[in-house]
Amino acid sequence: MATVAATKGGEKPALRKPVFVKVDQLKPGTVGHTLTVKVVSASPVPARARGGGGVPAVAAGSRPARIAECLVGDETGVIVFTARNEQVDLLKPGSTVILRNARIDMFKGSMRLAVDKWGRVEVTEPANFAVKEDNNLSLVEYELVNVAE
Image 1 (tube, one colour):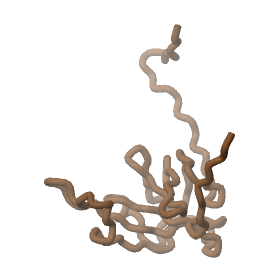
Image 2 (tube, rainbow, N blue to C red):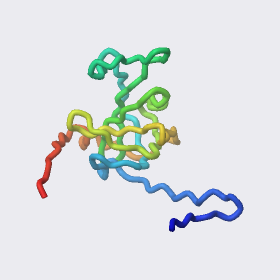
Image 3 (cartoon, rainbow, N blue to C red):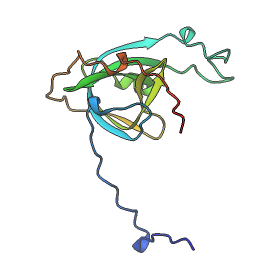
Image 4 (cartoon, rainbow, N blue to C red):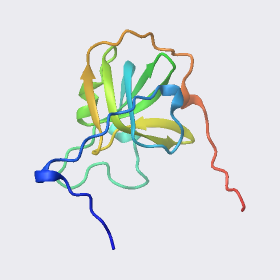
């Protein structure tokens, strides 16, 4: 028999406090990260350079997706963030943003940070840390290894 946690009087369940992580704590295949980062650089990815294996870049009746690769980081390191559509406008070089419910995607063996429709990108007041640019986690190449049990 399944039990359901009922709330009194239709109240919303209490939201848990976000746990902020640092860039150097990010690992491949992890999700649900909340972090405050500064945008070091941003470069748009041209639509023609994103060939999706024969899939047209524009679906019938829709606009092409805007994508930018932004180098973001904190005092522990930097990582490439893939900004999509409205996120591109928020991630300007020099701005400080809070990434909520971010995930790590793997692209050609390297880590990329991304926020999908379940997450949020918020511009916040400028942070008072210096970005450690010599520790780029996106330059580390990972290889999937199958382990026999």
